[in-house]
Image (cartoon, rainbow, N blue to C red; front, top):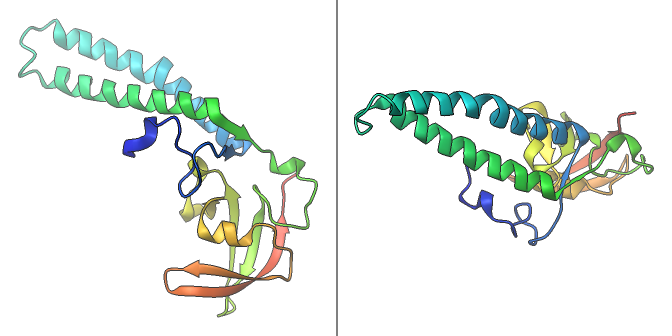
Length: 175
């Protein structure tokens, strides 16, 4: 986990502090479910194991106790992070996007690269990004380059191999 995940003032990476954490309704629900599961299911089980292990006596050589305490710290750190994030998140429902002819948060965009291959990505919140499934953060270079583009627009994106011009082929919003 990043060292600064408990920092209240930090915004999304690469943006000024105080910038909202945009998230889709599905991403928001997933974070809420993770918080619920950690707090109501996983943490009580670990507390029970730690209590049992502590009752055995010598804690210095008790692996169950030491591992349990370590896992409890990890859970508590993640719970603090999730609570702070959920306090600051701004849920944006792509289904309610009125301007469907342009790329905004939540859009699924297909673009053609210079070698004529097409790529489809969905622009989501920082905590929802999953490049393996085509879900990229709205603060990523590709998403930021595509924002406000329309079908047929040529957009210059930064890639590891250098700048590349891509053409927006389609824009889709759910709903």
